[in-house]
Image (cartoon, rainbow, N blue to C red; front, side, top):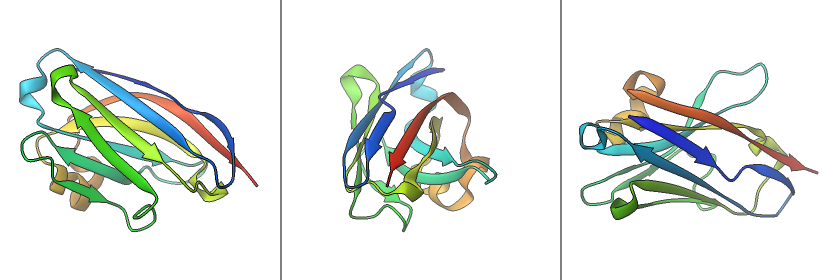
Length: 125
């Protein structure tokens, strides 16, 4: 499975960005997709995940109410709409694929089978 992420950039606090991640290859083996992020000097952390069947979503507490994850199964693409961005959201954002969105939210990086390349999100104050 190959994951291609895009959509990062520089935005002022309070602004919005939308990240996209297109999956290719044996996507049937990874029904869950999600996003993680890693700020300088910190560990990679879970942001949001979504299951292909049913579309149930999971979010980190720090982004609930501000970020929305969605997916287009026909395009094997997952999106992360980020609103009301804060400087603390500054990080490299990574697309991820695995077998369970719930597991991504609880077991975090251990539940990820495939990673995409990171895309930088910078929020200025």
